[in-house]
Length: 321
Ligand SMILES: [Zn+2]
Image (tube, rainbow, N blue to C red; front, side, top):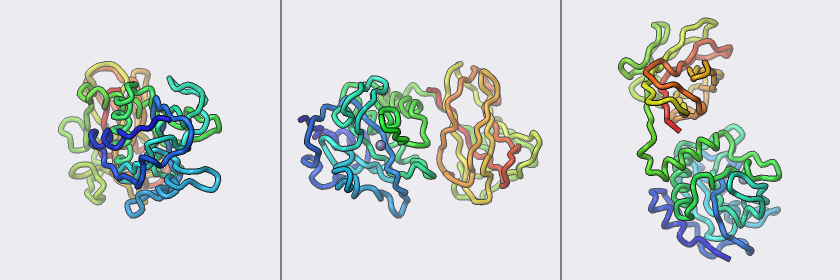
């Protein structure tokens, strides 16, 4: 049986924060382990700043129906990797095959990150996402595999697993690929509501500094209305291609539960609604869209929402994928 005693060093060399959990070099399941890829999970536990790794004990010790360890590392709320095992763990079950990962014994084939968030009404934090990307890129580089060897449990599961939730796995793989390439080739641009010449909104949109979750100095807000009065973000898109669109908004219970973002794609406008009452103060993925080249209004926040609460226009980011 092989082990991966290099894991802690490889993670630290990649700038990932690591906590070594006890005798990780000798804590493992019996059986084969010859990993060729990384498998992403969520734990289904609710983490928070005051309780950053609620599933850590279970991942180390297992549960009545499944012997531990349950993953090689747990990724806590702050993006810290808690390294639990250098060997085989009970995280993957049977692989049905996904991408280059064949069907077979998932616990032999893959190294597992359990990202500690509940996946039902909680998404992974930006810190968890960034650490997972960096760690996955570093481990796949060590294994001599490309980003396609990173999979989500819901892609390999033969038993209907849904994890990790609230994330586009193709986007996540694209970010791993960019990281492995050195990150120098990815075009990305941010337009804030204060970016000169790139943001336009009518005087119906007020200016606020109320929430400390804002991006930059302030943000704009407006009541929902059944009329067209969008706030536009203009980008100089360098080439026709696929771009990930991320949005940043501050959160408040009085904000809109179905705020429409409009993306002007090569095949017409697409609308994505987001709940601005939650998941504020961080970049949230709206999706990946085909955009034409050129300097033009590309993304809008619309006031035309059927839901109550102020519609917020703060910052938007495009990243080529
Ligand atoms: Zn899982």
